[in-house]
Amino acid sequence: SRENKILCKPVIVSRGFVSVRESEELMSQARNTAFETLERCHSRNIYDWGTIKSRIRDDVSRLMYEKTKRSPMVLPIIMEI
Image 1 (cartoon, rainbow, N blue to C red):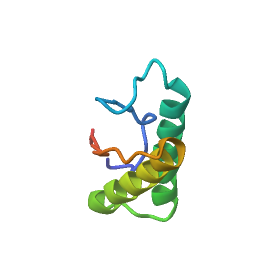
Image 2 (image 1 turned 90 degrees about the vertical axis):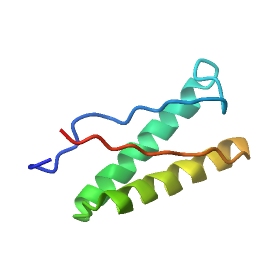
Image 3 (image 1 turned 120 degrees about the vertical axis):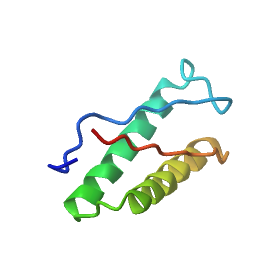
Image 4 (image 1 turned 45 degrees about the vertical axis):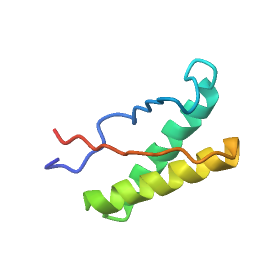
């Protein structure tokens, strides 16, 4: 947290929306979308967790709706080390 670095790619957990085993490509796209959002926030010097979570939620929700025409509940959790 002192160096403002992203240490690893996001982890996506699905409960009751789609089966992860059956939708590996969709989960991979969601993980990449979340990571790209994190990188975009980092490059724009946005470090407010509320803003980051909101942007991740919006971007991942948009992707899921485009791919499935369903709106899941997206709960971003950021862990600080």
